[in-house]
Length: 67
Image (tube, rainbow, N blue to C red; front, side, top):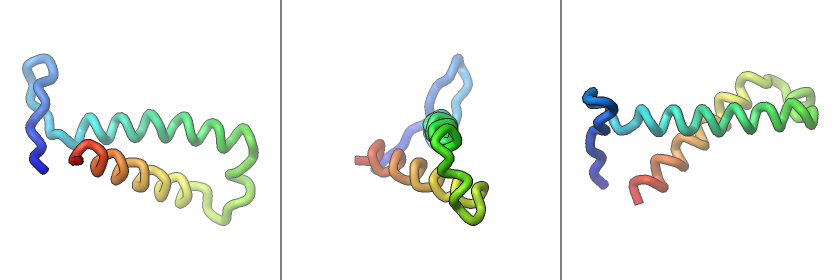
């Protein structure tokens, strides 16, 4: 499991940075779907749920890329 820096227009960024952005984009879509179907009204703390799902997405993405 070796991650290398990503060359983004001549600037080297940490390999986690594109993964953070990708998980954030997926999270935006999931949050809109959840809001549309009213899922967020049925949880105790919506912000906590969103943060937990984001961490699950990010860790899954890191594991997929590392494999």
